[in-house]
Each structure stands twice: as C-alpha cells, then as structure tokens.
Amino acid sequence: MPDVNGQWPALVSLLKGDRFGCLDSIIVYCTRREETSRISALLRTCLQGVILKENKNINSNSQAEYNPIGQKKKDLARKKIRKPLKWQAESYHAGLSSSERRRVQNNFMCGELRLVVATVAFGMGLDKSDVRGIIHYNMPKSFESYVQEIGRAGRDGEPAHCHLFLNPGGEDLHELRRHIHSDTVDYFTVKKLVQKVFPPCKCKQLHQKQLALEQDMEDKEMMEMMDMCDQENLSAPTQQDVEHTDSPEPSTAQESSHPEAAELPLQDCKDEGKEMQLEEQRVKHEEAEGSIKPKDGESQEADWLKDQEEESIDWPKERVCHTHERAIPMEATVEALDVTEEGVETLLCYLELHPQRFVELLHPTLSVCKIGCYSGPKQLQKLTKICPPIAVVLARRRMAGERVETCDQLEFDVVEVADTMGWQLSLVKRGLRQLQWSSVGGRSGVSVELSSISFYFRSFGDLSDEEMDRVCQFLYNRVQNQEKTQIYQLTSSFKAFKR
Image 1 (cartoon, rainbow, N blue to C red):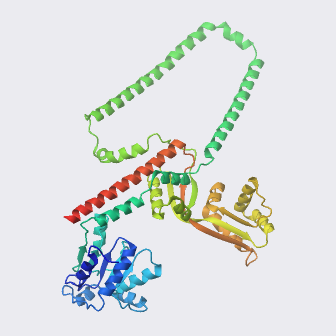
Image 2 (cartoon, rainbow, N blue to C red):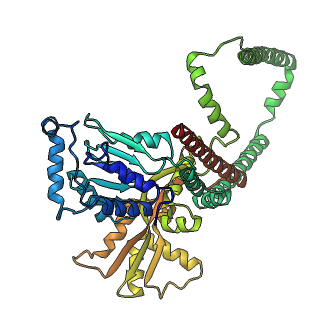
Image 3 (cartoon, rainbow, N blue to C red):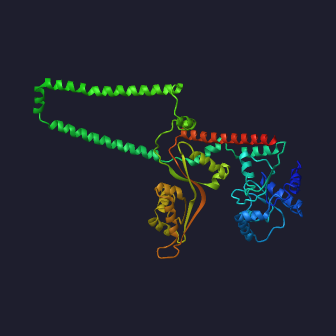
C-alpha cells in the first residue's frame, strides 16, 4: 500500500540520516494498528543491511558505569530471548497476543531490537531509560499525550531526539476526530445503561406496608387507651366532682394565672426566633450585594460548591432503599450497547462521582453460577437442606410455575441471590464451591462452575421516572462535555504543531 503523501520515504530517510542513524532504541508511534504492521514491514525491507552509525554524543562506558541497574535489566532481558531477531523493526499494538507483545518488549529492552512501530499502548510501564528517539508518524490527539510520549526518551540524562510528521492537509486531524466521535455515546444508549444499573426493587413497597402495619398498631393502641379511659371515668366516684364544684372561684383564679405565666416565655422564644431569622436574611442579603466579603476559604470553594449544588438540588436527603449489589455481564453489555468495555466503565465512574453517589463500584466478579448433579434430581433436592441459596433458587422457580422435581441442573445469578438473602457474596460463593466435596472425602458428584465476568457495583433501586431521566441527562451532558473538550484539545494541538 503506497503512501500518497510520501511520508514513509521521509521516515526512511530520517532513520538513515545523521540524527537518527546513530540511535539504537527508537519508538515510532502510529494511530492505527494496521498501519503499525505496514510501516514495520517497510522499515525491515528498506533498512536491511544498513549499518548503525556511531553515536558520538553518548559514551557507552560511562553509561554502563553510571547506570548499573539499566545494564542488569538488559542482561536479564537477554536471558529471556530464545533467538535473536535478524531484522531491525517490529510492530506492537493491543491486538497482538500477550506472548507476542512480551517477546517484542523483551527484545527492545535488551537492545536486540532497534525499532518498535507501535500504538500508544506501547510505553506504558516501560522501564527503559536509554530510549534515544521518539518519532510520531501521526499527530497525537492532545498536548498531554505528546508530552507523555516524548518523555519516554532520554530518561538517563543523555541526549535524545524527537520528530513529528504533520500532514498539512489535515488527514490526521480528521482521522482523530472520527475516533473521538466514534467513542461518544448517544442518549438512547445512556438510557439503556441506566436501566441496567438501576433496576427497580421492592424496598419502597415493603416500607409502605410496614408503615401501614405500624399505623394499624397505633390505631389499635389508641382505641384500647380510649376504652380504658372511658371505663375509668364511669367507675370514678361523684364526691370529687361535688368537692370541685364547692370552690369554683379559687380554681378559676389559679387557672387564669397559670396560662398567662406559661404564655410569656413562649412569646419571648417566638420573638427571638423571628429576630434571628431576620438577622440571617439581612446577612445573606448583604453578602449577595457585596457589603460583607466572604472568607478566604469560602471564596476558594465557591466555584466547586456551585457545581455540586446544581446536581444536588431537589434530590431526597434520605432514601428508603439502602443500595443493592448488582452485576451486569461485560460481554453481553458491550454487545447490547455497542460500547467498549472502557466506555462502560467510564460511564459508571461518572455515576460514582455524582454528588448523590448513585453507584459504588466494586471489583469485577463472576456472576453466573451453574450447578449440575450427576446423580439426578434427587441429589439436587438433598442440596436444598444444606445450601440455602439453592433452596431459594428452587423456591423461586417453583413459585413461577416450573417443575423443579425433574431438574438436575441450575443456572442463576449468584450476585442477585446473595443480595436477596442479605449474605456476603464471598461467603455464598465459598459455600457453593464446597458442594463439590463430600464430608467424608473425595468428590461429591456435584459440579459447580462460576462464569461470566461482570461489572460489580452497588446501586439504588427506588429511583422514580423523573430521577431516572435526570440521571440520564447528567450522564449525557458529561459525555458531550468530554467530546467537546477532546475536539478542542485536538484542534489546538494541530494549530500549534502547524506553526
């Protein structure tokens, strides 16, 4: 595939020239994976038989003397190589197997490989201090990426060289812009993810039933108290009533004096409360007009608090639901939403960073449990007596109308079952794994298989339709803002490099 812009011949000339012709560790960064394989093959062909020039700027003896740790790492990497490579360039990207990536990295670490044509996946965690050259075959997506990538050269303090190929027509700019647009998520996809993350629970219904029962209990107690009072009034003697009626004037005088004394402190408290409220309103009004200056700490946190308050308005302070543990399979979610795994994780992180903390992310886990009994349905029925999670699963299926008497296999969401029972997930999984072994010793004839790596998190289940829409709008706004920021950084980088 020829290069219409004549870019790869310029790359070959650059590597044969005086600047890069004497360098022995060079990284060439490309945007696309297929381009790394093509460029590495062209460099192997064009640089075949080319002798490495002598680098006069670096003294190898002084380097080995002042950098013994780097020399030890080179010797260790040489031991891991089975056969030294004949060519001078190799490709590296995330699409290669782990063994192939490890082989290329070890060859580059020990100095047997001079050139690595790679995507941005190469270099993260690379502990090689004597990288002498960095070449960008395509324009980086931002200044941060450019600084990070060229910073991998010359970490040992010796001179290093960097070079950037910039297409004046803007082909790289359009390519990177297409990548940014392809990574964004539309509103419909965001809504589908929110529905998966916040499935409805029964906490609100159970809370309402509990309140109704408590209200019934209070009504019954009140009725019993009223009956007891009526009975006491009927059985009371009438002489006391006569005694009270004999002296009506003193009693009325006392009763008239006590309420006045009791009302005075109450009125004073109310007046003081009104004065305090008026004082607070006056202070807020003066602060708004600028007559009272806020403190230094308040002025520094004003912008941050403003953004947080906008997202925390009209949200309930206390929820009936206290979060549930949930798991959504990664592979099925990626296929259903047509979003990469990293994209889904990013959206979940946005929800975790929301002021209301809708989501608490946990480590990914295996969420699907499959149990099989070699001895048939009777063995599965016996497991219900020693394993409560299996009993819960069978009881649910029986309530749904399934015939569990002839069932010898079960497949269920272990995270959902553990959350329903209120048990810890680790304890449930441990108990299920122990079913494979008998108490006497040896196999029990039960197979337990955990599969389907999933996103694991805690989330609320009592969000209303209006709150779900607000969460969707929050996520969509964050995605749009991120897209605008990346486009701005890309355009700014292109303009700066073009000067």
